[in-house]
Amino acid sequence: MDSIQIQPDSKMQANAETSPRDRQYWFTDADENQALALRYTGEILYDKTSEFQRVRIIETYGYGKTLTIDNMVMCTEKDEAHYHETIAHPAILAHGAVKDVLVIGGGDGGTVREILKHPEIERVVMVEIDANVIEACKLHLPTLSQSFSHPKLDLQVGDGLKFIADAAAESYDLIIIDGSDPVGPAEGLFSAEFYRNCQRALKPNGLLVTQAESPAFHQTVFAELNACLKKIFGADRVYVLLFQIPTYPSGIWSFQLASNGAIDPRKVSSESVAAFERENNLQYYNAEIHQAAFALPNYVKKMLAESLS
Image 1 (cartoon, rainbow, N blue to C red):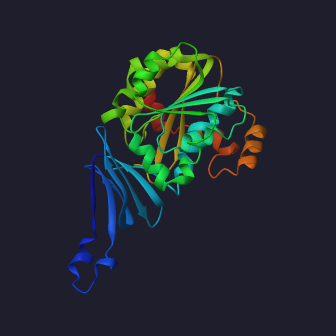
Image 2: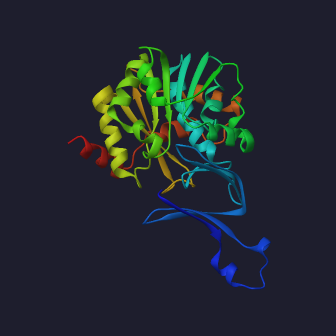
Image 3: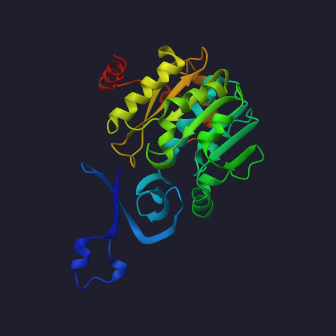
């Protein structure tokens, strides 16, 4: 979303008998048509601006510590598992033999945490453009950033666009694009050139998963990304996953998954998913969610069909 207000509630300000400690402070993530407001303590735990973006962490009453970037909610302690479990596990379980993983973005650490729950994975390279995001989450979101010191992780601060452009062909079984909205440093993560480079860096039968915005809120970006991936990977090798997350615009969000081979991510053994879920005490993802994530409402099907016509 595009704008922010972090301020005491106006009615509380107007009450002369209310002390500052009793005021209600709201973080408002808004555009011209709608907004999400989270009540927070009034304290900003982290606030730094790099050459790329402004990074803040606040303590909200309903969702715990919350990471914001350039006035947008990125993740909260309460519902981050919806996002991070879905971006990682469906693809890894569908592939069945992931060894080498590249994550572009993912500075909060949640995606890497989930990836490393799979013991068969041998190497994870993560490239995050802004060191401030990593620092903020190490300091204030340890439940997300707990895997930054894992021996299988090669954590690099740098430009993911350049990294993938320079990557050797057929280097990775899985590439995950865990970026923010297509503005600022994340804008290039939605380009055809970037995804062609990703395909080149994937091994045969490798998978790509990318953050793909909301089909209810960002219709144009969502549909254009789908069309772009289908042109590069093939129309029958691109899949949409939908999931619920209350602190993102519209409450419904998406990933898009592209296969560099014959893997159909919908065809996963429910028994294997259930066993993984039990072993890892997951909060959101399970066998039923895996199948349901690929079920698309009619308005989404129509939107994607029209984007290719």
